[in-house]
Length: 392
Image (tube, rainbow, N blue to C red; front, side):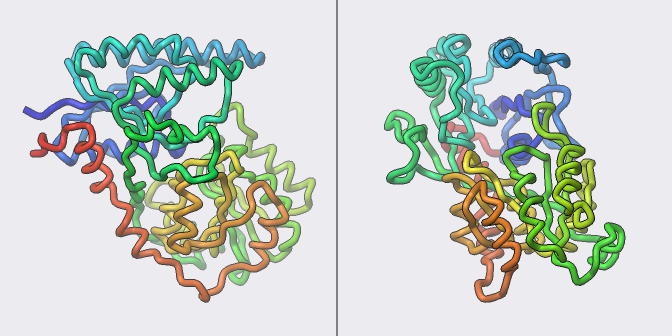
């Protein structure tokens, strides 16, 4: 009989949701009876080989304008969802649980939900996308207590990068008790179909000159992607064109119309093209192959991995990248996938755009692809939590 595994995925859109869905599919194909626990709003467009239970609660539609009341509302939803997770574990007699991400916020309130389950043999693991825990809610002592409480619940942490000497003091893996539980896994590649329409056709559709250097910003719009700085940088490259393809990620982020207003104020609106919608997978390749480079200019607070990077690799498009200490930056450097620049600098973006790309340094596309497989990711995960012997 196949062992059951619950995959707890409260994030419904963006990079964390994409990762969770792809990893769950890979785990399921390894012969595990996987139950994917998420919210009704989870952004899924593909069939899957696992069971989906969308029974988690959504955040209230009318969130308060006051920050602390809004945080309380989020905490109430979180507590309800963790109670649902606990109930599912008990009702299905599941012994292995994977969390799609690690979070510590409010852990002293909910940690007890799972401490007793651990004593009865339930093993939990978390994907540690962002090991630097420097976002604080409350005083420092509460923050540290929350991290310690949450970290103690897990038997294993899956990471894409280890700690660095001289790195951030807030790096979770600097704690030896956490480091000994850490297991490195590759970030799998997201697969999209080949481009079906020509470069010329796409550029004509977007009213873009065939000789213009085109930069692509792709995916959910978040303030941390520094689109405002990209627009400012575009002022220094009047012959270049910017394609922005994606929807807002949440109500707390800037809206597309705000960025469009910025473009008008900066007098670069004639250089911008906007596609404010979720593209079908069959269309993604068309826009990547028709651009010249991809802008992944994250802020210094970004320390996770980038799903859009795998799109760029898939369609062989170099990137201009920035961000904090992360596997993402390491990979761009190691595989020579483009240029790494100073984070949060319109000047750095502008200079990189002016320089463009040459073939002096050839990106190692094939090596990157061979090193980043979901099958290997799933194999390591199952082996680490003791389910590898359940393959069928």
